Length: 224
Image 1 (cartoon, rainbow, N blue to C red):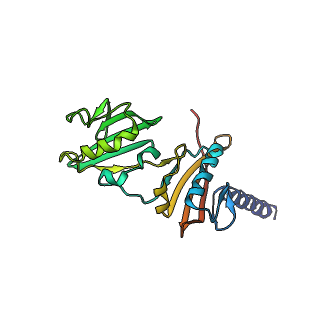
Image 2: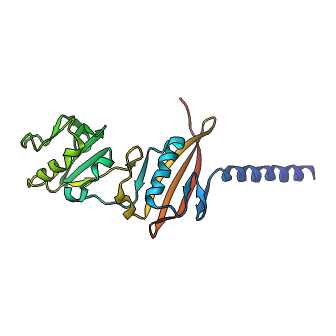
Image 3: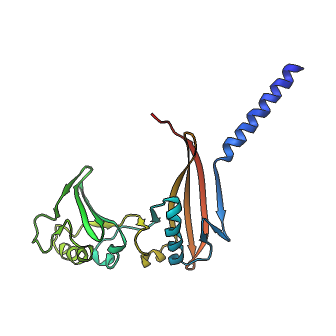
């Protein structure tokens, strides 16, 4: 009888422990009120301002505009570049050719070219007139006209242009309001060797924040 009681006690402890472990990972859907200062019913511009404030607390850094496609010509990017910190141009014709142009303090800070492995260069392209070429330290405001000129050359008009995730230290890009879903993540230290990560989706409907989807998961990590 004592053995049976001990068995059921051990089983009960195991079940309770399992429940505690599972409770550290959860999903929730917010349809009213707010979460982290993100208010249901807010316009995209208002939500962006709320994210900028949240970034100071959670270190989000950037927000992804879900399902945004690459652009096929510079004209589709007009007035957008100053809101971002990079631009990627990519062409696949047997072998991938990629150019990554990074911005800092409203200037071109670095240029990388190549395929899988990228090499830093001072300018791109390297076979066009200097007034068309994009150089390190060029003002981002001048890049658009240079891109338009570069795309007039047959060797370069097949590149697709991709914007990165929206960095929160830059002002709101009004084009973000044309997309119904944004996403971001942030992490926190839970305890010794345990980190928690929140994955968040913001769903918009009729120009207002309609729903917040939040998935939280904790993981152990090993420190060497």
